[in-house]
Amino acid sequence: MLKTGLGVTLSIYICLIFGLENTVFAGVAAILAIQPSVYRSWKQLFDQIITNTLGASISLFFIYFVGDGPIIVGLIIVLMIALSIKLKMETTIPLTLVTVLAIMSASGSEDFYFALERFFAILIGTSTAIMINILIFPPSYKKKFMQDVESTFQDLSLLMRTAISDEMKETSYQEINERLEKNVLKLEETFKLFDEEREKLGKANQINTREFILFKQMLKVIQEGRHLLVNIEEHYVQRYTGQEEDKLYDQQLEELIKYHEYLLLKYAGKIKADYQITENDSVIDKDKFYDQVIEFYEENKEQKLRNLIIASSIVDYSYHLERLDKLINQYLH
Image (tube, rainbow, N blue to C red; front, side):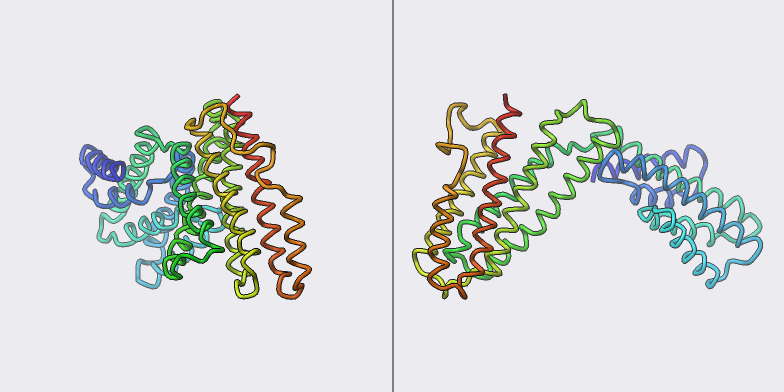
C-alpha cells in the first residue's frame, strides 16, 4: 500500500519537474505497475516498454493515416490485446490499453506532441513504481511463506481433528474448509514467487539449498493433508462404519496432525533438541494400521472399499511428514 502511494506521488513530481501536464496518466501507470516480486517487477518493466511502445506507435499511425473514431479505437484495442497475448505479455494489457486510449484521445493540431507527452508520462509512472518496488522494502518471501504455512496449518489442524468425529457444525466446517482451500492456493503462489526470485535472480547464495527443499516439502505436506480431507469428505460415510472403525481413523488423524505441529515447532526452534515425538522413524505403525483396515474391510467389502482410499491417503500423508522430519534434521544439523 505504501509503495503504491509513494510510486504515484513520485511519478507526479517527476512529471511536474519535466513540465509534463498529464500527470494523471503517470499516476495510473504507477498503480498498475506494482508487482508482487522483484523478478516480476524487472520483467514487467521490460514488457511494458515493449508493449507500450507498440501501442503508442500503432495509435499514432492510425491517428495520422486512418483516423481516431470510436470504431478505430476499438480495433486498435483488439489488436493490442492480440499482440500482447502473442508476445506472452498478458500482464501488460491493462496499462497498454490505457496508453492507447490516452494517445487516441489526443486531438487538435498539436495531437502528436500531446500524445508523446502522455506516452512519456506513462513510462515515467511505470518505471518509477517498479524501481520503488525493487529498491524499497523488497518482498521477503521466506518470512511470508512461513507465515502462510502456519496460518494454513491452523485450519488444517482444526478440520483434521473433527473430520471423522463430526463434532463441528456443517456451516462452520464448510466455512473453514473454503478458507483452507484459498490459503493453500495462496501458499502455492507464494512458493512460486519465492522460487522465481531464487531461480531467475540468482538468489541461491542468500538461501540454503536444503532450506529451499525443506520449504518445498512443507508445501507438499500441506497439500497432502488437504487431499486427505477431500478424500474423507467424499468417501467416509459414518452410517456405514462402527465405533471401532471411527476410533481407528480418528486416532490416526490425531497422531498425524500432532506430528505435523511438532515438525513446524521443531523447524522454528521451539522444541528441545533431545525431544522426540516418535520412538522410531514412523509416526504410525503402518503394519498394525494395515491389518486393522483389512479386518474392517473383510467385514463388509462393498461399503468399506471406499475407506481404503482414505487409508491410502493417511499413509501418504504420514510418508511425507516423515520425509519432512528428515529434511528438518538435515537442515538443523
